[in-house]
Image (tube, rainbow, N blue to C red; front, side, top):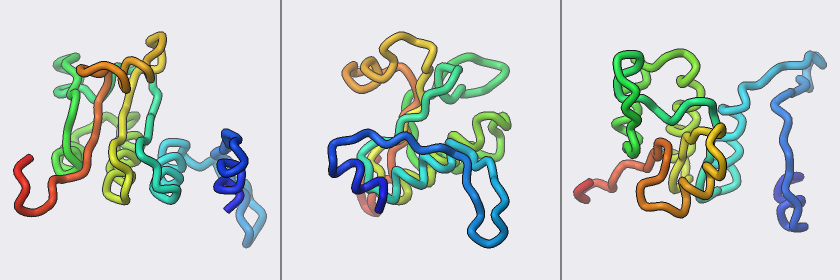
Amino acid sequence: GAIEALLADGRIPVVSSIARSQDDGHVYNVNADTAAAALAAALGAETLMVLTDVEGLYEDWPNSDEVISRLTAAQLEKLLPELSSGMVPKMEGCLHAVRNGVTTARVIDGRVQHSILLEIFTDEGIGTMVVPDAPEGDAE
């Protein structure tokens, strides 16, 4: 509710991935990728953008630096067990987002100048885009 109120007021909320338990008062470091994906799904966001320090999801890391430009939720789910540990929370977040109403989830290289604009406004994009599975009966 607080985030929706800020958005309705024309503000851009900055959400910390530190949380305090209501039960025991302990402070927890919540994975920011996981938190962002849950927030995107809860808000009904159109796109989840995950900025990182790699070009996207590599097809056969570390044997290749070929980036997968687009894949469906089902394709990603099959790849998850084989991913390097650093990419797992990012890609699990993307999977959660698109399986819960977010239209696309994108992992892009934040080291590239204007990377978000390049991803959104060019046909080829520069990272990896995850999309929901095609509805039953539709061809992918």
